[in-house]
Figure 1 (tube, rainbow, N blue to C red):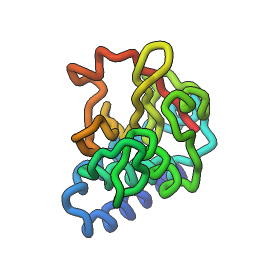
Figure 2 (figure 1 turned 135 degrees about the vertical axis):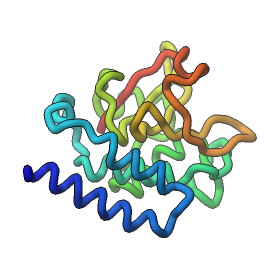
Figure 3 (figure 1 turned 45 degrees about the vertical axis):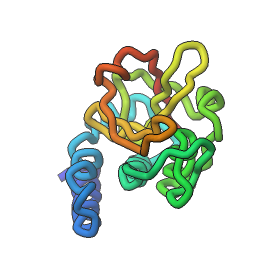
Figure 4 (figure 1 turned 30 degrees about the horizontal axis):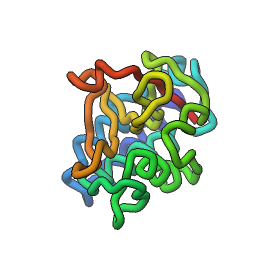
Length: 173
């Protein structure tokens, strides 16, 4: 069996063991981390500084925060999150990487990636000239974000009625 397949199988097995302690997110994490890994050639077409494991860990961190209250300027699970605070927290916890604190500055973070080449852990930025909202792609057309005042961190689909109409770009560290 090729090394990348063994590594993926080991990572999926580890995720399954981890998920026994988090039943609410189990289905989401299994599909986000295991079922959506692109073939090796696709994964390397737009390389980034993060490893596949780090990218998946970022997505796992983000999925684990679903349900956390929104708070403008928030950047911790205890205090709540705004969209850039959520991204910063997930990247620090999942990969030890710092991200820009504002969505506008995230447009220069990492490198651009075609939307058709999204992989787990990539940033998705929404808005025309200067994006005003962002989330973390978790696979199968879904992303985690902190949408607005009064809301909470949630999982949404890029092809959903609202998000599919927004100008969108992707970035990869």
